[in-house]
Length: 223
Image (cartoon, rainbow, N blue to C red; front, side, top):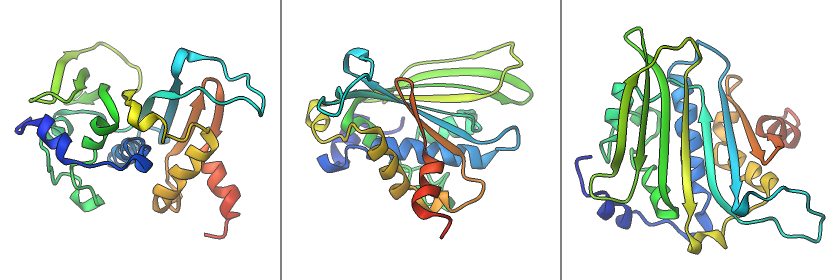
């Protein structure tokens, strides 16, 4: 990256009651990636909730859900091709300006989480590639970057792992998956109004919520 990422992260404030904003930003990025080139298949975004100790959710109403430690967001959008990766490398990229993107949302990832891991398989110039890198609060930001050609006929994907929710944000992070789904609807409401909105699924250790279905249930088709 072209700036000191540690300084940029410190500059980007994130209120504790906005602890889910990094997740929302990652989901919106996935929506944009699917919009950019979704002809190959139906847009799908899957959000995996990772909890402390990977405990099974066999809890009764009197028990408290284990704290959330990580989020994993997987989509089948266009992926981190050369153009998108270059855009990621600029702090205030205007690449998604037409979609309302300011190019700084990913810095919220590092305010609430220790680091992010990105893995993306995509097709560029007729060749399949696999790109992996970490986004960390270091001077350069990009760490452990690898790019290789892969022989595959499988579909493209991008996985963003938000790793290690910081202690100050854990106590503010709503751990109920249905509440998280409702917050996603609130933040991404305009996208759910589109008939082509990707199917967004929350997986909480085997328990799944289809956020689009919840949106339709609460709006009852009145929007």
